[in-house]
Length: 203
Image 1 (cartoon, rainbow, N blue to C red):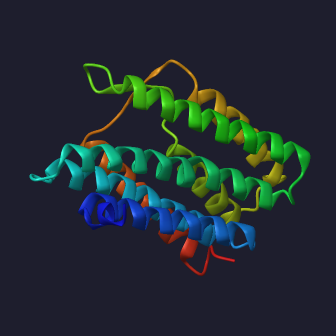
Image 2 (cartoon, one colour):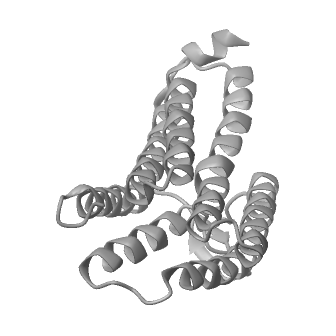
C-alpha cells in the first residue's frame, strides 16, 4: 500500500492530511488562529492534488481509484472533523458544542458520500455548500475577533456549525470545480493566513 504514496497526487493528499492533523493538534491546545491556518493549507493541498491527478499522464486506473478514496477521507478530516474539534475545544467541550460538532461531521460525511456517488451535473455544479467553506467562515470569525472582539464567539461558532450543517445538505446548486474556483480558494486561504498569523491578529 505504501507504494501509492509515491504517486504525486497521493503524496500531496498525504501532505494535506499532515496539515489537517496539525490543525487538530493546535485546536486542542488552544492555538485557534494557527490551527485555522493549517486547515487552510490543507484546503490548498486538496485543490493541488486534484490538479496534479488530472495532469498525470501515466497514472493507472487503480492508483486513481485509491487516490479518490484517499482524497475523500482527507476532505472529511480537514473540512469536517477539524472544524468540529475547534468548536469543541473553543467551547470547553460543552454539550451544545458537542451537538454542533456531531452535526458538522455527520453532514460533512453525508455530503461527501453523496458527491462521490453522484458527482457534478453536466454544467459542473454540485449540490449543497462544499465543506471547505467552513474554513473560510472560521477564518473570518477569528480574524474579525482580533480586530474587534466578537461577543459570545463560542456561541456564534456553535450557531454557525448548525447553519453550515444545513447548508451542506441543502439542494441548491454550487460550482463544483474549475480553475476560477481554485484561484478563489487560494486567494481566500492566503488572505486568511496572513490575517491570522500577522502579529496584529495572532494570539
